[in-house]
Image 1 (cartoon, rainbow, N blue to C red):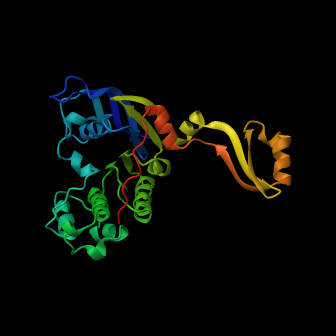
Image 2: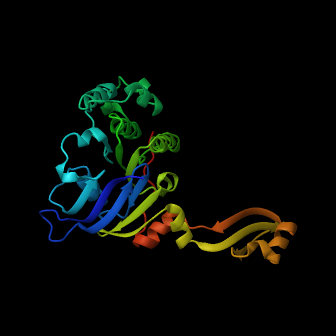
Length: 293
């Protein structure tokens, strides 16, 4: 598998700051994967993304994009990447279709605008001015914009924030389909459901440093508890019992419980990504994102 981005000892300081915002981070993004960069607000996630899309210069360290130095790449680089920032940027006095046709004009190759807008449920609203769109509609249109040039590499920041579960599912299905077709995604988000459902690997950024890089599965194994909790009813009374996962198949008490009690639920000690986020970063996640249509 080819390396899409190779970042080594990346450091960056804003001109008005007395300290580095990015403090020597290194990571690879492999072609054909969804790579998540997670961390609390102010950790350096957005700064890292802005550097990688060439919006910020003056960094130290090295960044290679498919083996080429990022700083040496010209405008052709933007033909290959799609970017969906957290805050949608559109011309509010133009219709949604006029917006997409305008942005499509910047690229040599473009996707089918109608197909994309139909998939996210916006085609029937194509002649509505974006200023009249709800927050969720703007978020979906923002994703269409990121996909306009059929990008090889996709940067997404809080891509489902503000969407109801149905529309969020549509976007996540499209991202998974894009990945399965060979596309590569760099995702920043606070929504751990997105991480669990989409990311092949994740990196945690805390105070400008990466403190952990792994797969969601390996993180759950590392931070989870090797135990099984059984909730059951016996003689009409709800009760629970916890058993060690190791040797569970030979645990006589566990076997007897399954045979004699009315089992309602069985759960392993798997830790959620939200719990892992708190453990690794030491920071509580913000409340649930605002939902919108």
